[in-house]
Length: 247
Image 1 (cartoon, rainbow, N blue to C red):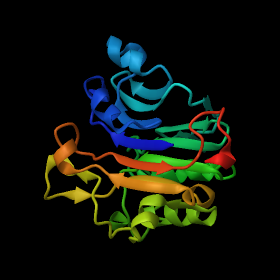
Image 2: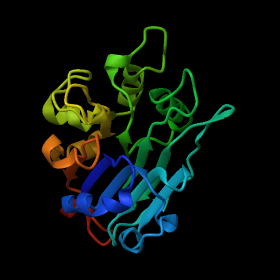
Image 3: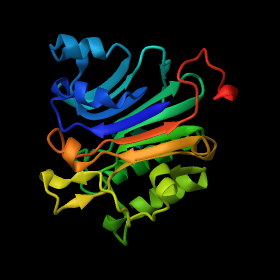
Image 4: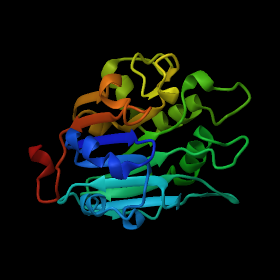
């Protein structure tokens, strides 16, 4: 199975054909339009098997799968005390594993924006996150940790590690958090301000099946977005009629 996450930087109706070149089974796309309201026939046709959430029809979080991939929405909470968090899109894939698409948002929070939203989501759903892949634009890196916060990037990575969830990029390339050699963001399309803020994290039982991981190159993707797609291949069934043990 191939999973791709990509912040398309808007206007996905004009870019879905480009990302389709990666031939993924599941695409997690940030800043994309709602296909049902985009008034774009080809985009709607491409999006037959999908979930989407967002406050505006023009910019939200979408999870798109090939026909034959069985997606079931999961009723996980996005409510932390008196505040809702965004954006998180959980689903069950082929009854084999759970996947949470993420676009970590500022959410008008002066203190709990971006990684703070991920931290809150983890607190209310920790008992459900086990055989789960979490992937998307976290808008975060350990380099922005602040000493007086307990919801820093490092804290989130540590808490996920306690339940057996790790960053596959860091394991695959044997790099440390905050010392990534491959950026996922060229801020405002500048090669002078580069960061690693898009992630794919998953459990050890699926990590052992990881066969390939790569980040798109500046040359191939900067014309479409300041984010590079992150792609991984791992040997699990693409559809429900395949036996997990044969993969």
